[in-house]
Length: 344
Image (cartoon, rainbow, N blue to C red; front, side, top):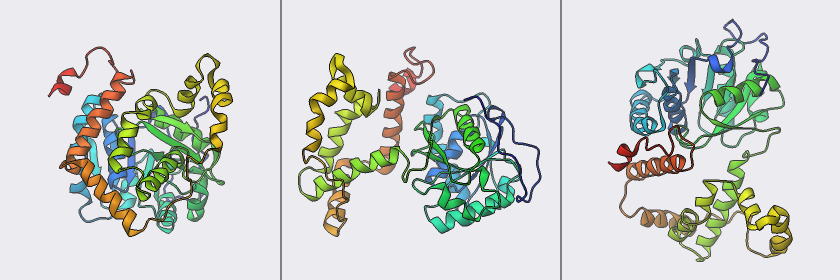
């Protein structure tokens, strides 16, 4: 990535400002919305050494956010904290305007309601210093549909993370029809500097890339439960003990290419291509009626086997870190770093 200049400031935002810094020079981030996703972003940015100012309209937002950061901090310590990283560098602002006043990047993580997103992004655009990129954590809405109330929509991009943002590296970046391409390039470079693994999308796709793939698997799983073909436990085990282990190393495309042996993907398609006509999948969503709803919920309770959500979160965090370390994606992987913490 060679061009990382921020979008050219134009009339609209209430605050005048010098041009945004280079992506690697950002020091202060604003996080607007402090729920599970927004709080995860706060934890990630704090662990990467940024000063973070957060705002959320909920009355209990600050204690809830600080509990989330405290709960995430042990995992972040195992991932490796940046020099100077500290939870004490979090400030919770009283107003949206206060939160973004000195921001060099803004991450919006409000609930998935289109009208709310439109209104909030319009307010953020009006309050954020000129030239500063504003990213939305939306999990499905195209930025074209969300940037309608902004006076300077050119700086609005999607920065879609995977939950929890402090643990899962992926972020998908894409602009809308009125987004300045320079803002997309700048956001991608910033996320990379902030330690994320970035997919920069060339065009808008509803649900983006990873969610589209995840949704296909989710729908097939619901069909199997609805038809009594598999239990929740069966489905989860089929992934964690099967393709999920391969997917942690390489994605489904390269995994299938290996199925072709020395002939690679071409041989795989020649050999297995006809099976695509087999009625193995049902991509139409099943009716989420009460019976299916109850079966999925009860199945998850059974699979949890007495473990609380907190227990499962801790177990997930530990195990994902182990996979990341085992596959060489953490500093010091293979050198024994963190073994003492894992043994506890």
